[in-house]
Image (cartoon, rainbow over all chains, first blue to last red; front, side, top):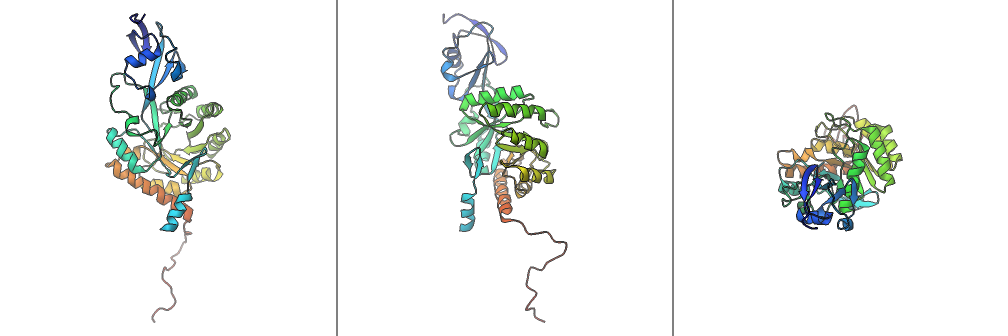
Amino acid sequence: MGTQQRSITLNGEQRSTSAANVADLVQQLELDIRQIAIEHNRIILARPSYEKTPLRDGDAVEIVSFIGGG
Amino acid sequence: MDAIRQENSVDELVIAGRRFMSRLLVGTGKYRDMAETKAAIEASGAEIVTAALRRVDLSAVHDVKLHDVIDPKKYTYLPNTAGCYTAEEAVRTLRLARELGGWSLVKLEVIGDRKSLFPDVPETLKAAELLVKDGFDVMVYTVDDPKICKELETRGCCAIMPLAAPIGSGLGITNPRTIRTIVEQSSVPVFVDAGVGTPSDAVIAMELGCDGVLMNTAIAEAGNPVLMARAMRLAVEAGRMAYLAGRMPKRADASPSSPTRGLIT
């Protein structure tokens, strides 16, 4: 299960991942969960639902954070 | 001095029930690096900082981030919608921002034109309505048109932020009379957002009765941003005090400052 590769669109780019769900993906990318927000197939995810959101082929994931801006 | 301090201690800025001492709001963009961002923002004395929401750079996840230098526990982050051209994009961005940090106080800007960065007013009105219904406290960037400003207030925006000149232009307060009209008609705080280039512009905005000033480029693109941040802090304070004090009337002719009685003749 964990080694199965899925093809997803992550921040606009095609990527192959072994992550089974969004929480796995965040961990693999070494992201600080407190500094990001995530959209899965255009739906905004609350942090507790990362684990409950499985990744499937063709999914679109957007991971955003704050940067300097006016 | 005590009187001034006392005056200041009660002169709070209240936005949607949140209380602040500083009337200078600053952006966090365009600095050379994070160290300069931190130093300039500290020097500005600002308590509210705007920030943009963007895709995480997955090739640089361990770089120093805005959060690392500007502590979200110490500063009020004001998520913006810079780069959004439709109400839909703006609402999507701010919902993500709310999910990120729980912030409901937001800066709405829907851009209408890439060259002038003037707002798209119909989309701004639409987004404002959606966001207010969704529970956001919306501080809105708009044109310096009193009718539009009133309309945004009617739709529930908690602060009206007319531009004084195009974003990043540094041209100053191009229409002081309209800014004054907007201040006079508004029952929510009014901020000049965009156009300030130098401290005298900030003083003018405050003397006109604005509740505060929001700026980024004027500090970030100064020769010495940290020194300019201090200058802007003082300018906003000076302009505010002058507004509260009430300026002398203008006269067509001179009026001697020394008594004319008791002159040696």
